[in-house]
Image 1 (cartoon, rainbow, N blue to C red):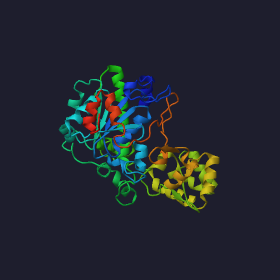
Image 2: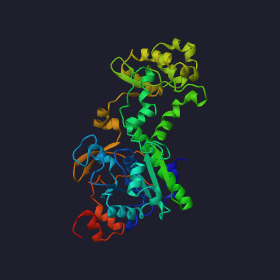
Image 3: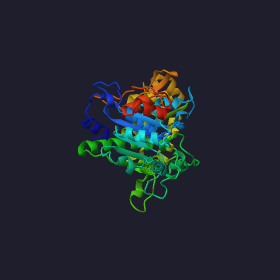
Image 4: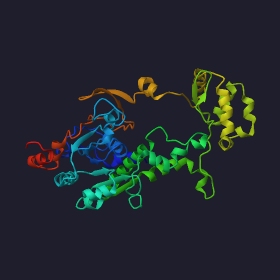
Length: 417
């Protein structure tokens, strides 16, 4: 059973108590309604994981210092604190401004963590120790707290405090040389892929720890090293024959320059005959059925053993007709196929994004495109309940919920009590 499905069974969908954030909830408030997450993180990996937890219904509190999360400005956008990326990445969160080098702010965070279920961070281990926010310190007296830290490399390795952004992890996990294996140049994949992969593991790790706590009553420290997560992800198919010592790495069907998408008479098409019936349908329509008598086409095993020949042959056939003709044939014969769309086309055309994007209103930036939560729980749907906040927008309210007095809050914020 998927871990998220297990989480639904363990976490009752009860209203969030007033002292847990005052978040408006209902019977369908998401599987993590009633769970509080404190995020101390920057850029993409952990903020993305926290966004997913927020979409599941958690009350996510984002802690930032005077130097705000640089992810708020990445990619450009309508506001200096709310880039286009941040409008979605920081949604379902409340922002608290705490300059943690100060003792009062650090103590306030520790008091806030006393009200939390989960703490997620990607600060370096040395920084966390310097701030007195390492796992040993934070978990003392908080036996039910889940402390999740995600770094480039494992904390018990000599590289624990080594800087590691997406490019570094792509390079060291083999992702940046995948193009080379299909006859191209070494290069980074054009997506912040390592951060997003690791974010998925962080979310999974937190859900698993919540299930464990429900069963045992105990929180725990959880660690997600980016390198480990992304390498495991990359090797799922590419370990291949090297799963046995002496074997060769690489899933051959993927590692051929002839794989596609393929050119057609007027564009491109992603067409994948997979089953024997698919190959026969395509080659029969092209009037080339005799080619299927070649030994290489005998079975899925022989086709996967020589993908250069198989996909090279397919490329020649697909070039003879238009994209529309091949898509029509594929619909008629149930052959997997798709048009090749650009990101701009997908964003601009509701038929292409299939409702994954929708218009929403932000009180500061106005109309923006909101990415719909992709997981569809039937009984406890994910939702976007809060717009992305400005830095420190909820400082006073959240600290009051943590039990700080007006005078204590004023001393931290510099405002009049």
